[in-house]
Length: 147
Image 1 (cartoon, rainbow, N blue to C red):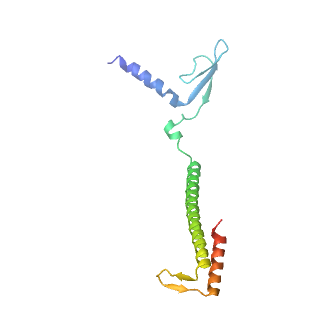
Image 2: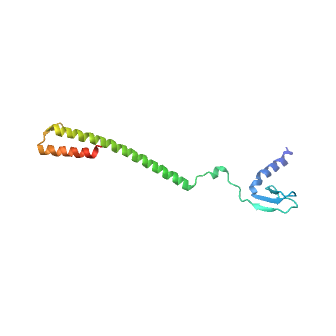
């Protein structure tokens, strides 16, 4: 177990080396530029390059920016508003269709019949002026609600 301690220390030291964020640069005997983060060369002039702090782990670098989150929220709100508007549009189309059918039915009833049954079941007789007015109202409703 005692023999493993120097190796463990060396492994920990090498693993922590990138955390120091210092890089050494020098030119070796053959003229090749060498970079190292382990240790500076002995007996050779070198430059120290500060590479700054190491990058944080990937889990913290992928946090969405506030502007991205705001943009997604705006898009979601716009999509919901569009869906709501589409639903209201469909309801309005259905209502227009019902109003159109009712107006056509009323025109037929007022054109053919002089006696009209009320919703409460009572029957009334329309005079010619009232009947003409109801026919015009039905025609106007047809213009408004029917395509």
